[in-house]
Length: 68
Image (tube, rainbow, N blue to C red; front, side):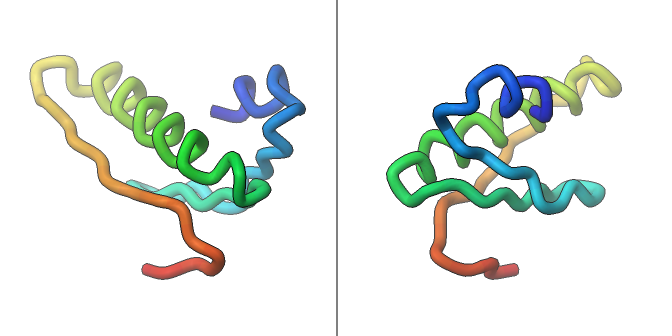
């Protein structure tokens, strides 16, 4: 996730928190949904690396404020 954010500065994507099964980022509103989808994809890839036989699902979205 961090590498992708560095390689794509046009997204202005700042990773604020990575904790257990959650990630929180800051990006301009026009990139919010794209970043939410990417975060889910990267989390699934990481989970599959450690538990390849378990299917993981993610959910998330974009918001103007952090909502847990």
